[in-house]
Amino acid sequence: MTDADACFAHPRLAAIYDPLDPDRRDLDAYLGMAAEFGARHVLDLGCGTGVFALLLTARGFEVTGVDPARASLDVAERKPGAGRVRWIHGDAGELPSAQADMVTMTGNAAQALADAPAWQCMLAGTWAALRPGGRLVFETRDPARRAWTEWNPDDSRRRTWIEGVGDVDTWVETLDVSLPLVTFRSTYVFASDGQVLTSESTLRFRERDEVEGELAAHGYTVESVRDAPDRPGREFVFVARRS
Image 1 (cartoon, rainbow, N blue to C red):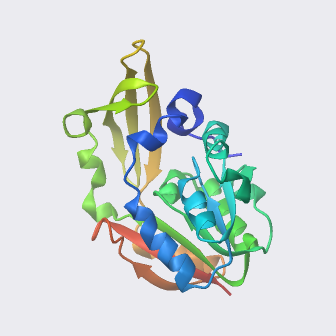
Image 2: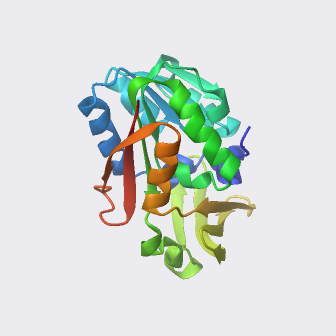
């Protein structure tokens, strides 16, 4: 199973993930595509704390949420409506076969598959999980926009008050840029008791033609590469159909 970063896998960090990132307008485009493609069963790979999965079930979709971080799934399973979702603790190697009309990876989850084996497992696993004609939809940042230049303490430091937790100070710092890999550290300081937690992550910044070639090699037809409406010009949103 793919190891999850501490920001998703540590219980105290998983519990504050949603309040630290409350603006999820990025999910509107995915909800729209689920309706556009007439999907009935959506498999959300890298579902995290279940925000998108629960938005889908509220609109009548059948949903399976899959994530390697047990702590994040624990948060998801405590939310209202969670009983309508099938939750799977695992990664692309544990997906049910040929059941989904659409597989989604939101929030740049695809970039977290930084090494070749994990990426290949995702492509093979999602293809097997889709019914013929089903679609894989995911986003990845455009390397040309150099998003990592904004991942520094000066630009990212903020304090957030969270009900039941208190103030939490957070910031991000880029540790290494060895393209296509970028490693950064997120720091969390809990004012209530002074605990400091950190989470290191490595993302892979893939070029558009690289992703299209990999999709084709695994039997997908790339139907379109769209813009992210909430972050225009900064990301590629791939829509690939299983033959």
